[in-house]
Image 1: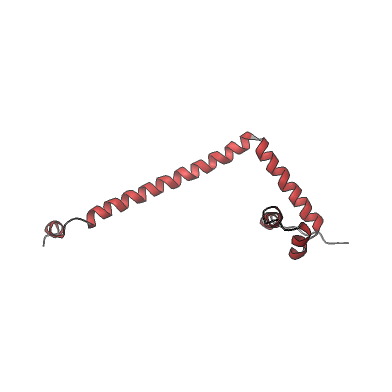
Image 2: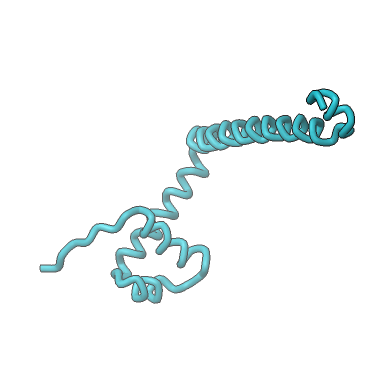
Length: 106
């Protein structure tokens, strides 16, 4: 009897990507990764079905978009804070040296 192997989702996703995005043959990919061609065919079929569900399900698509928007908003806020800090630092370092030294008590 043949032992049934389990592959993690990252491995499956990468195998499918080689076929779908890079245009390699599923038999060639299966052979190079040491997996059966039928397993890879099943993963590709599942990938395509999941892709169609995402396009047909506007709620799932909007949830994904909402999550991405929140991530981008957080990144934008962080970037704005960093910009403001750099502006303040530039204002301090670009002042005339006499004014700065008088303030420091020299």
